[in-house]
Length: 333
Image (tube, rainbow, N blue to C red; front, side, top):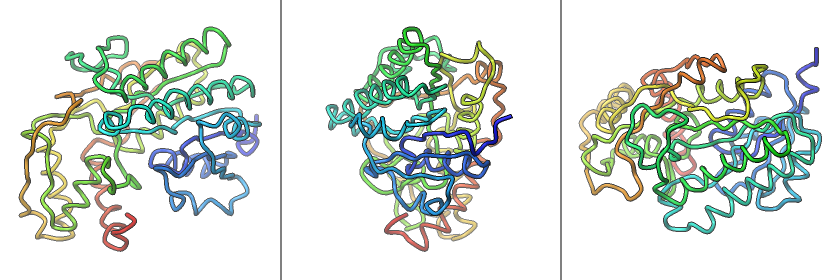
């Protein structure tokens, strides 16, 4: 049996929120990990605790540069491709850069992985692929038309992965992430995800701005469930489980109003004044779908997926982390 340290895993976007959690997981389990990141949206502080570890290699590079991809994938047995430009609003503002990173960069990584003889390529897909489909829960083989440039890029990723599996024989698995949240998710910037942004505002006694009436709902998914899914996808021996896509979620939905209720409850344990902060409502945001809920039956059946954290359990963990980190270093996180 191969020792874990002899197995090399490349994690693109490894200095980001999800990528750094994956680095932690596989380093802790003794695998050799290479992190490729251009630090555009990731942060070196997310991986600095690994920099002196002989099992860890950091490469500052860009997936839009094929030479960087080829360097990073050299000797890798597996690839976890997390590098991307997220955010629907960002893609509406700058569709060209979103396409360059998410489509051209993705193709570069597929080509480099194929040429390097990578065993399996697991990549971050997106629930945005469901587009204008109103069916709930979302089931993998039933999608609608994309509602944003970002959604188009993530669907194109799935098409490229399928073609590379059929044409070149590289095993691929796409994980359609549903509103992932947790430690290290950056609350700063114009395109910050809603949970860390709300948490930051509440800690600073600011009124969170909700797009719409707050009754839109999402399948909020804690980071540890996502790490678990990546590991299952990476190492499954089930031949029926590869060359396909999976919803990566908890399998329940929460409205934004309920989300804020939970956040105020958990944060007011640290600061009672937070319980009385008012919520501000604004117009709905372009490109947003009203409701999102994943079926995780396919992942349960083919990968043996069993989510460990409910939204509430994950939120309690996350708010504790944010309280410790945002209160001490609010300018950086």
